[in-house]
Length: 301
Image (cartoon, rainbow, N blue to C red; front, top):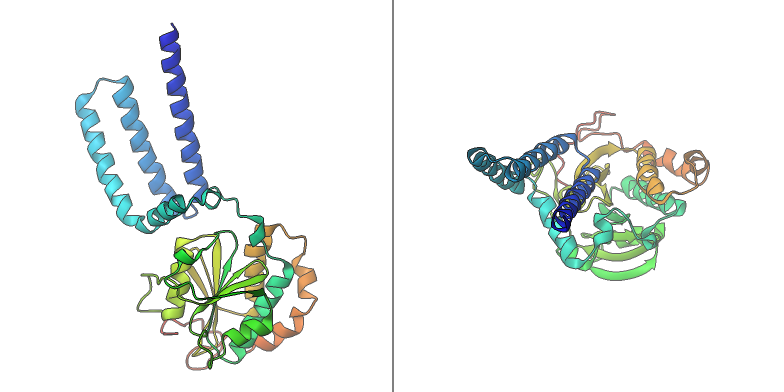
């Protein structure tokens, strides 16, 4: 009796751990197609386990095992980037990132959003290329980059960001890493994405590359050729955008992330109102100068 009680307890714990792991996976998946693939894979795995444990069907078990193995190899190829990131986080012990609990020290304020939008607007007006990585909980470390850049550890300010992207400085070609209300480093070299190689230039590929690997960071891109503003998030690039659209996206991504009490209307009525009006007029242009075309597929910046 005690033996069967122990066996049942093990089965119960096995099921509970499997369900908990499945819930964690589903909570981390955002894309609908990926969610369907994961559901189908977990259904095959659970079917194989049930048949092997409770039904004596050796041929069926072998067939399902072969299908599960083939699906595992296919998913390993499709999700190689996500699996690499998972192993990196496990190897560095950053379990808080996996569980979706961003550390408090990375939280930004409404002032951070105001300064980022102001900086992007001024850089866009001057057509000065820029790449700003904003860490909102991924706990980015030097080993996450191809080159960690130069340590800055300075208070975030619009003037400092603009100076870091001055064309006559050695750090202007790299990215600037921002955490909370601080500039951590400059001249950072980011990993490039493999998607859209023929459509985008190095800056946009770098923005896609870092946001593909870390879903709790965003990247602001300013094109040097056209002054176009872009925002990369979770391996997707929204472009072209105006300063007001950038403000809205940052409020949604950073503001909701940090549960800030500042509303959008109060922020719009402050220092951003005049700056947005001056920068919006130059951003909705394509390569030929026509307004609101939304076609920027050939930009190599």
